[in-house]
Image (cartoon, rainbow, N blue to C red):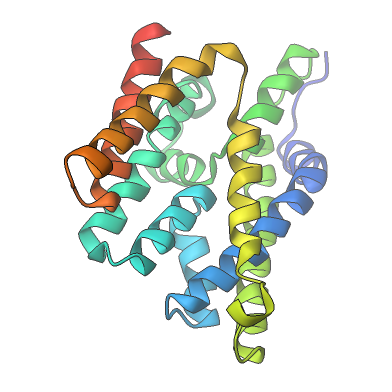
Length: 229
């Protein structure tokens, strides 16, 4: 079993995540187009990626903003979608143990589905990977995400009417791909069904605002999944 060295762990994490980062860049471009339509500049889009660094959350926040949800509704929807990150960071307690608060905060900020999964997979294969590996993967993927979203914003500025060319559908396709990647099998049927039922009942039957019902549906669906875990 190989002992992780600071430099080796960092660069190994950055190297291992490159194939996944390439895939992230695809829907990063789509998000850049969407964010530009919501009125964000390319610089703001790139800065949002570095400060928030939560792809699916940024996408739903921008979509909600375009739908007229306002600042509060957009932020709440994004926060609810990313509740799973609380579980991800909680599972990394041993990685952060004994480190200064700022290293823990930095590591938690960079923890995402991809570098977290790679770290667990590496440990399952007997590799002694830890904090440096997590940071290397996180920074490499953040660079890919911020670069691709900024490029999407610049691309949108160069096109007079993205909707007229059908390019706005790239976001829809990217969101479908994200949803598909989150599907784990039949165990997800009940939480997903509950989420859809809550949104349908609220919007179609009760006439509630769609953006709030989407947030509520996501929260109740996540609670359903947690209760069954």
